[in-house]
Length: 358
Ligand code: NAD
Ligand code: MG
Image 1 (cartoon, rainbow, N blue to C red):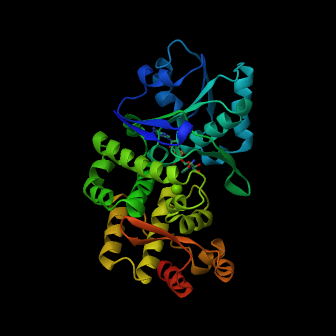
Image 2 (tube, rainbow, N blue to C red; image 1 turned 90 degrees about the horizontal axis):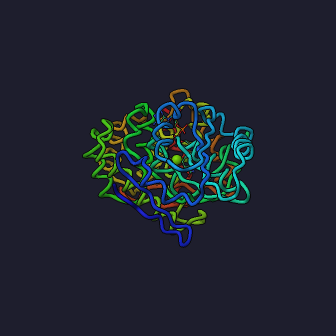
Image 3 (spheres, helix red, strand yellow; image 1 turned 120 degrees about the vertical axis):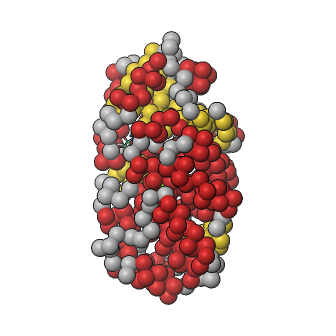
């Protein structure tokens, strides 16, 4: 087991990474209360709830199972967590445990931020994406019909348990979506990690536990470093959005869920790569390496076929933002070095959108 500390002053916490970590000796030290509420969903509960329950001897444990899916990441379903806490008489010293992917983690964290003005919570992320991304950084929340993650709070967990064993049941498509964010960390921050990923992609897709543990450790290390520099996203944290502005347009066009977030990020990153090339930063050889790694990870490298130039312009509000100068993108100066910038040529951006939708 590896332990990585996210350094945020008095809100610092450990991330445990390894195999078979859902155990009493890992969990109990982080539960100051006698009461525990596990929040999970109907897909993950049959797989891992028994293991978690048997790791909590001596605690008064209650469980709430939410329906599975981004469609249920709503205020309405979030309220069910409070209904369960209140009807099971949990007081303000209770501890919440999120057992599931990013949807369960975000909803549980936000409930922990609000229940009786804030209680501790532990994250047990069960998707690769949630292990490398949503469980680090303290952003929690739910969707509003008018926008994703529009209602939420910053609330750091007291501990994160990233168990590589639980990924064995994760569908391949979900694993690939998580790999998109893993590759992103190498691209924006760490050329050696990018090299390592090129050499270990096959092992990762085969869910080889030590390869997974290394990828999770490095990814969390990079995200934790960036978050420690900029907890509230006023500067460098924006680097984590590489590929996301183009990616969000793809998700919005395809309909959320039709393309997984990581798939949209991969195609969106290739658009950022194309623009970085035009700006004279990346070399063609590097752009090809990036395309190859996404393909090796089982990810798309182009937007959906039916998506046109005007879809992108509209969904990204390109024209309006170019006029008022507010369009900032994450581009790559080289593999391992991302920049947040508003100074790229709008002709180059137009050419990128035209080429990538051709
Ligand atoms: P998810 O939570 O919907 O999980 C994906 C699917 O895998 C679900 O059907 C889930 O039930 C299933 N699943 C989970 N673990 C499994 C396992 N071990 N075996 C089999 N199936 C399993 O999606 P996700 O990709 O984990 O997370 C996406 C969410 O995370 C989005 O809502 C996004 O907004 C959020 N997010 C938050 C942050 C943040 O900083 N807070 C960052 C990135 C993403
Ligand atoms: Mg993302």
